[in-house]
Length: 357
Image 1 (tube, one colour):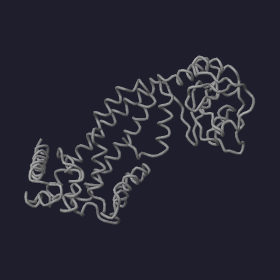
Image 2 (cartoon, rainbow, N blue to C red):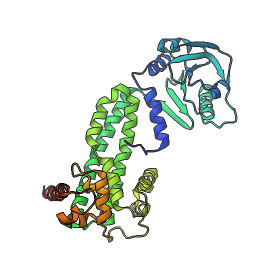
Image 3 (tube, rainbow, N blue to C red):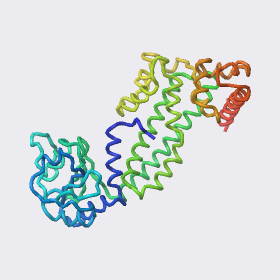
Image 4 (cartoon, helix red, strand yellow):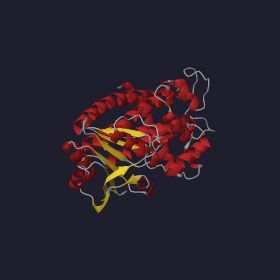
């Protein structure tokens, strides 16, 4: 899920997985934290790192949380191998480029930040006075927090997500009814896309908490999967149904994800990305191509759905087509034509029933 959801977020998620509770790396870092000795740990031994190191001594032994804890009692940095399986050296002085800008104040944290920015390697600073573990990579800075704090925030985010999913369900149910009546407006469509993106932004935040919780995040993950099911998939089909035909729907999705929090609250801004610039949202009636509804019918391959939409252009035309007209489309025989007609009829009946309830 969320494979397009911003490069920086993915980099942070990778870091959080690497040092989640239950991993031997996290155990070693927390041993140093509890001992209040402070420490500087570099997670990589590539050429760029070795070029800015001085002094210290080679260890070249298998990684162990207790070894790291003992070695941190010395002043210098500890260098781990890139696969985190070996302790390469300890008591090392790091000499990054002093011209690299940093907003940190303490010597240990300034060094860690500069090393991370200069080499792109994950660097961990463990504060002796403030009792926190800070992780740096490129321009990312992240403070690791106690599991109980993360768990409380994750549960709070799940409650928020539940409310947003309930609102999205109402918006989509209303759009479903309007689509079958061919009365959907641009306002209805853009509202559904906006609400889907709101849900997915909360999901991204919860996934970060799950990564940070490690093996303690299993229950949160199960609750998340139960709540969102096909939300993102349906959101992409929604964009594909309504974006202008000369625009790639994947590009539209990327642009919506890249919008700032302020931008994506503007329905006009989202409409512009879909190719509707300066169009009155409430007064513009618009018909779906049918990707979202057709994908709800079981056992209809995606290439058959593509052929259907290429032939009929809109969902309304597909619904009004006879068995013979459907049969003429490549990949659709008599049995599949019946399955499509019956499937759309059942969907329509379900939508009408939901509206009455």
